[in-house]
Image (cartoon, rainbow, N blue to C red; front, side, top):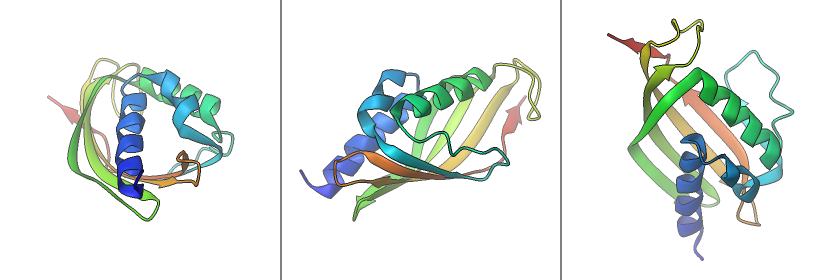
Amino acid sequence: MSDEKTGIELWRAWTDLWAGRLELAEEIVADGFTVHVATDRDLSAVNDGPSVRAWVAALNTVFTQAQFTMEAGPIAADGLVAGRWRTHGVLGKDTPFGPAGARFSRVSHDILRIDGDGRIAEFWSASDPVVLLG
């Protein structure tokens, strides 16, 4: 299987994971997984399939009814896959972004590094601020 095909398939599985197919985490995430995002939280414990599953589940209680649209990519080469996606949904609880029930939109640019076993070893994400929709 080519690097490009593996990367594209993993990207699809990764987006399916975020869309609620939490069982995929154990299949696609490598042990020793590393998260690179702009946050003041320590995410070092998010380092394998079960912990990624729990992390995504927790975030999905904040950003509910999420619908994902690819805006660019995915592009895969040399063990990396990248893309830009937009999320629309509803805030599931009061947050610094806005009150529970508010509709939102957010754009993220993500990069995944695929290890030699065909699993996601690292994740980088740069997200625009959450935008509340009227």
